[in-house]
Amino acid sequence: MKTITSEVNQYWVHFQSGGKDKNKVYPRALVKCYHDEDFVVQLNFYPDGKVPENHYDKRNKLVYLRYPISMYPNVIDLLRNEKPIYFSYNIELKLGYVRTGKEPIGEGNMDADF
Image (cartoon, rainbow, N blue to C red; front, side, top):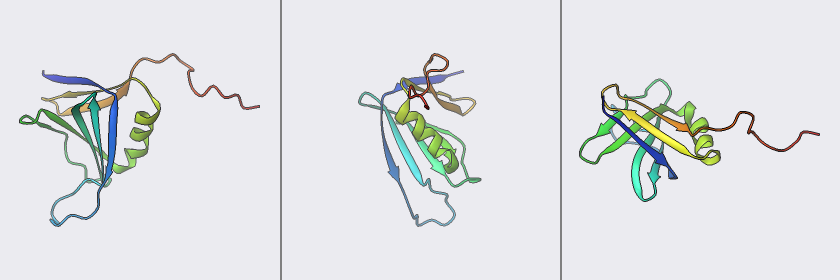
């Protein structure tokens, strides 16, 4: 099984609205993820209940991971607050994920609640 894996160390966010074709479901938010200057994965966020399957563009060697828009706050929080971040995608299964690296248990916020 062919699996694509890369670290993600930069990203940008794009919010989208509208769309001419009423039969097509357009993503409402896009997050383009990079490893240094290489564009490695695009995270597309669709209306809940209308999420198409993940996709690998062979010509451009680009992975599109697709999530419900309700997952957007979780994913953007991960990108903003964690390091290192990785993604992986299995081409045959069309299964992908974004994850953190190993972290010590209890690392959390160091501020005491006194």
